[in-house]
Amino acid sequence: MEQLKSRIEAVLFTTAKVLQVKDIAEILEEEPDRVEEALLELIMDYASREGALEIDDENGYILQVKEEHLDIVEKLCPVELKPPVLKTLTVIALKEPIRQAYLKELRSNAYEHVQELLDKGLISRTKDKNGRSLNIRTTPKFAEYFKLKGDLRSLMKSDINKLLKASTIED
Figure (cartoon, rainbow, N blue to C red):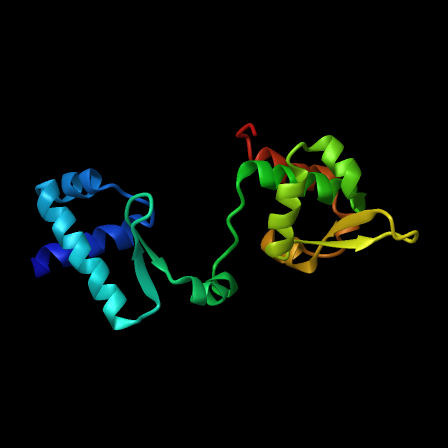
């Protein structure tokens, strides 16, 4: 059983995505019942050693960093953006500073996207002079993430449009 647990651990580490028991069994050419039994033991092993990793089994099985250590991961690993969020970020970059209400007109899911981008530090939001509207702009972390050098305003719009074209998947 120990060897099977090690092999399962290697699969979960390598794939870095949620897998079902049948997927793991197929990869390892093992019986699903044996894989499931070994997975349960492996989950208990990780839980008992109180390390930084865990196997989450909510929607399948995935090896991941525990939530209390995600701040470390975010410092070391690039931020992953889904195509619709990337498109919203592109609109912000092209039109910054942009009023949040106007962004909502342009991008229907803008409020959800804005919150995600704020959480990731790629944009900032401030109140305008009259204090009624919120203006959104990109942050230095945005420039760092996309490896943009110099003044963002001096970048040609076509350069920023490349970010949008990199995300060809529809919302």
